[in-house]
Length: 399
Image 1: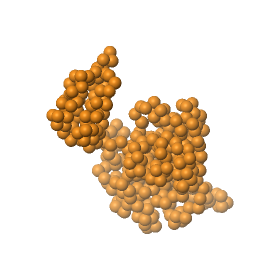
Image 2: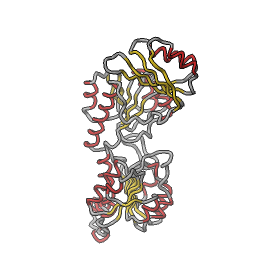
Image 3: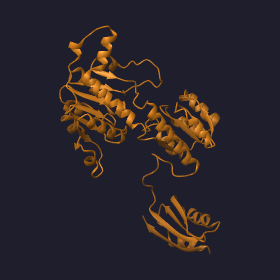
Image 4: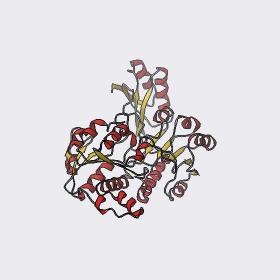
């Protein structure tokens, strides 16, 4: 098993992967054409990345590539269409950095209220400005709106409640979920923002959430409310955010931006950096030792499952529903050649197989095959399958 690690991971990960019998190449600087070249040279079965973008050219270059693991939450840096077209599993490590990101979100919240960053800057200029920088509303008894209550949003909720804050959430809820969290539910993001003293965004980036948090949310917010985004820069309409900040309506704490450098160190030319009402960090939400170690453990678990041909944990690009219209159930003797006979009969009848499983009964004498196909099998097809002396019974039904 050949594994290419194209990003920096916890120090124990390479050794653990080698313990699984992997032949390993590690180069945290690979990206773009350099990554494609390495894919052609090394031809890995598994590619592990963190922030490195995996594009269509990389899937074309990696002839043996079967699995891409994003060592973090979300897969927006991976060409999902390209992966799925070549039958490559794409997986990630959801929830493993939830506590780290939540801690930073709460840090931004406290900074917005107590102006810690401004105080530090004042002291470093050798200026004492208690009069100008001491005013704060305090967070106890205030209301926090959490937009997106997945793993990270829930960690934020727990920490906000520990500080005595009320929480209103907007998310996709399972029955009883919000009640168990002890929060109020808002029907829309705008409704949540309207009652809150601070808004914290924890939405995944999808086509549906891109720029979802825009002018309608900012106009609904209370005057002088706080806005925090530690999810993805693209879920926020940054132009609308800037307009609200410049109008003096809100102040913002951001760990993510619409346009971010891909390198670990680079100039940051975005005009948002010049706004005194914006307090930024360099997309560091998941960058704690605790989060890195948890993600590393999950990466090893995923590779181990792949090696054992077990179901791939956290796989995000398998079809939820395939094109099958009928299922054929065949009870048969557990002998060599029976399954090939079934598939040959279906192939000759031009039935495309969409899914298949074969279950062996105790004693190892008999088995049951379930084959999902496109199109209704005719009586002739079923007769052809049943013609084998090793087939006990065959039947078909619509799905």
